[in-house]
Image 1 (tube, rainbow over the protein chains, first blue to last red):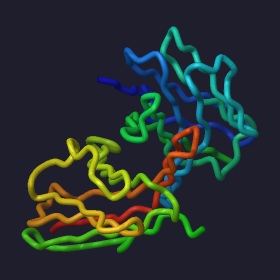
Image 2: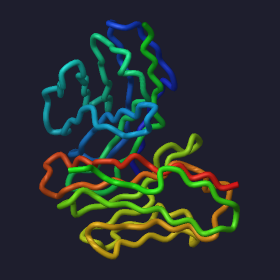
Image 3: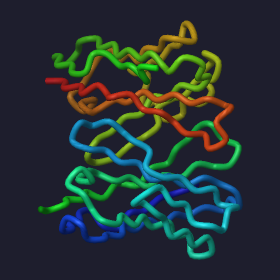
Image 4: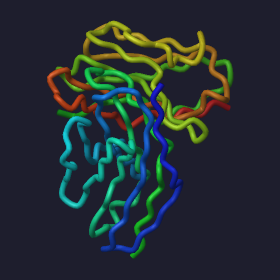
Length: 115
Length: 115
């Protein structure tokens, strides 16, 4: 069975600084997807960034980028130029390739951006 | 598109009562998912449907929980009888098989409190 671990329950960062959130996962699959979701206080789950395991190039979406280390089964999220609106819970998630089904989530990291 | 719609946004009920949560997926999405979020267990997949057919209900906690999808634009999650330990936020999500990234779009969630 796949598992996703986020070892940092809470983090804080100053506005305009850079922060990195950690995520590790365990799987015997070779092909899969990885995601980072953001959940602000409004409770809405919002996709931040995604990565296909077969792609070596790290995904980037504006201020958000990932460091995907397949051999180490690590998928960290870097947020550059942090903004107050980035304050939220961040969830790392795993999905098997070819599956439309089970998204397996980590327990989340609560990020606070301070002015 | 209005996104995934869930109702009600908040539900407070007493132990033993029947609770029905409702979801309207994004038009054209063939997959629909029900998740439960609690502090203790995080986000868990309860059940998902493909073309209105339940595919995997292994996450449904017990017989008190049931889910239906009578048509492509509507699904319900029912708890009967409800118990205080069912208190959680319940999310509905939908996805399209034509999306190469298998992205799941989440609704705003229903916060259920069972007294």
